[in-house]
Length: 194
Image 1 (spheres, rainbow, N blue to C red):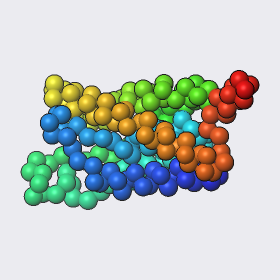
Image 2: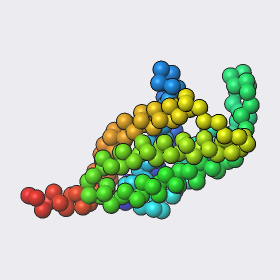
Image 3: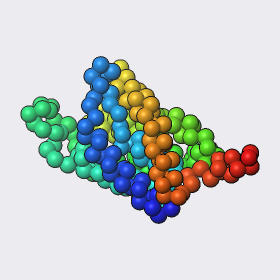
Image 4: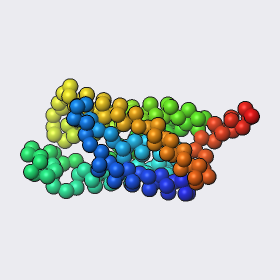
């Protein structure tokens, strides 16, 4: 269990590196694949609550460090309009909320029905983006929701969800390498069938 938990933490940290090289899809309303959130969501359904909270803290901490720290509003040569500053730590709470949402489907996942978790990962990413956008608008003091923003959030959630089977497949391989069963009830059911 410890080796699997440590490996999921390392996988989350590796997702931060790979995220830097994933481009935005300009033809699809500037949507992108949120690999960090996807890896966190897929790991959250395979681990216990304490490990999930550790992953939420690490993921939210590094996401905020990557997005908030640095020049206010980004590089002044690229971003000409100032963006209101978000407070450091808000992502930890959003990651934790997404993690508890995934933990709710853990009984189905342990039965071998990972498809529901894959679908919920897209819904969780959409809720994450909507909550983040609501927080930004609250800080700005007004609420403006354009059609392009909604399409960007929806397509980002869909693109991210499409890659969830790959992450779940990777987690199954990691679990086998660590001699850890992430869906023990499905394994017991297969043994009874033979």
